[in-house]
Image 1 (cartoon, rainbow, N blue to C red):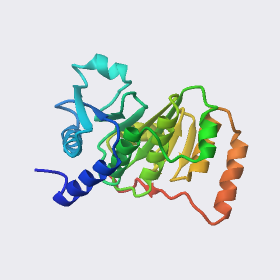
Image 2 (image 1 turned 60 degrees about the vertical axis):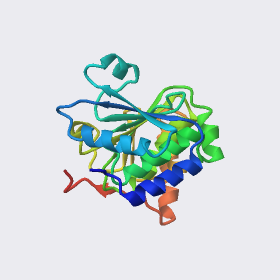
Image 3 (image 1 turned 45 degrees about the horizontal axis):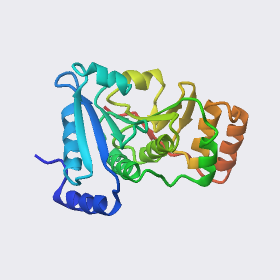
Length: 244
């Protein structure tokens, strides 16, 4: 039984026809047992790929294709890489369903076009980052705010080869949610030590990345945060209570 409705298939087919330029490869890591959503994730990817001849799926077994998994730095499943001729460091750990299906689709478009709509100021900051940055964005499929953080993280990965950005589905990986104290989503963890609660605008998100690599002090970032909140804005998030 198809997961995508006929209406969604028609919309996506037209969307891909209008927006895709270069080929995109979805590299999928799975296994038959002990993986709750591997089968459904694979089906989503196959259905999406069937809507454009510019999208292909490569499927690997996490156990028997261990060398390939290690080459891509894959340490849990289901895992999906969205890449073109190069691996930008975009990772989906867990099923890209619910609101995160939109993140998958728009990532495909960005990778195919080889560019993003990041602000010029963000590009200037990224040009100064020459050390590895690992961003993990914890989400749930029911969180309407999470794609904001996931998309920002993945755009940064496209724009700077030193950035690797993971979407991590918190309910599928409870040990990681516990390790990183994820009580609400999105929760973004940068280089293990720097955290951001809620869906932040690009300016604040990038400020946190700068804090993680020493380009801004925690005090400077906190001042930016306070200025933003003083304007009556907020960083929306969804509690994990009742999930799972």
